[in-house]
Image (cartoon, rainbow, N blue to C red; front, side):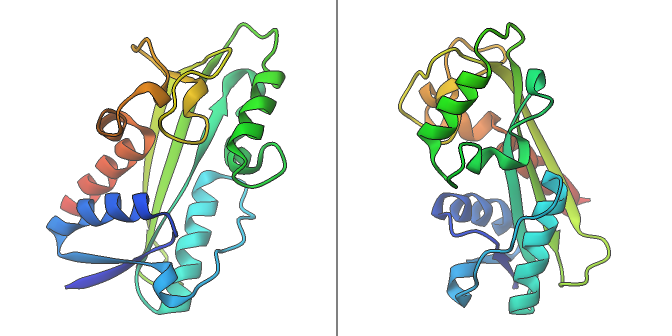
Length: 194
């Protein structure tokens, strides 16, 4: 059985990726099993950061690695916060601060279209010349105030197209079927089958 290292310490992501890769006889392990620090995310795009993370973990372990980079891109802000989504308010992972800053930046702006973006990268080795790249884009609108207690990140202010609730008001299974990460996983699955 092939083994892939997941370039994340997020238990939810590990579960998702383990389930996705099980039919392909791929066993997944978190990078925490190897006491690896995260890669410096100094790329200029989701693709670059995902590849940086996957190469970093592949180099540290000598095993294939899967990484993701994701965030929210707001059309009226030229795609911001984009790759800086997790640290938009200055402190990495400050969901409340990030939401507050984004809502302040959007005050008085009528065009509220936005999309969550997820890019997955799989590197067979640190020098893999052709990493697998899979992308998922979940389109919607920004709300003017948070709604719902589920999810994480910007979910409380993101209303998916065709829905009348925020992403934070969806059940985990509903979100898991339609989110940007779900779409990227479907794309990766198609490549693995191809």
